[in-house]
Amino acid sequence: YGLEAARMAGEMSGAFDASLQRLVFDSSMSAAWILRTTGLVLIAASIRNESKLAAVFGVIGALVSIQAFSLVGHTASDKDHVWLSGLHGLHLGVVAFWFGALWPLHIVSRMESAAAAAVLVDEFSQLALWLVPAIFVAGVLMILIVVH
Image (cartoon, rainbow, N blue to C red; front, side):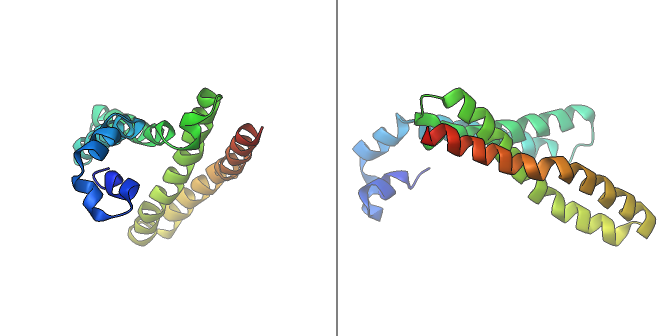
């Protein structure tokens, strides 16, 4: 976010240009940055706490962070912003869940018994049967909406 003005200027000196910084501040990038930061703060606050309330804050933080991406780019400027925003959130949410689950699955497979790890991997695989196609379907629908 802090370097967006430099990107707009095409050189690092743009980061210190007050008029470019004001332009960035008044854009949707500012709202997206605020939402991403808020989401990450909620996630960070929930990490070491094992309560249900902390889990709720973590999930809300993840959803807010993911949805913030729909405030910039093609999804923000299209006339069908509402549809694109939902599909983009679904697309990014599934990808984030998928990649976010890989490390915990690896840890479980090393620390738990083979039977317990197999049950967890099987459940994750069953969920993947629905989630992976959802990534593809959401992406295709976004393309169709933007191209139309």
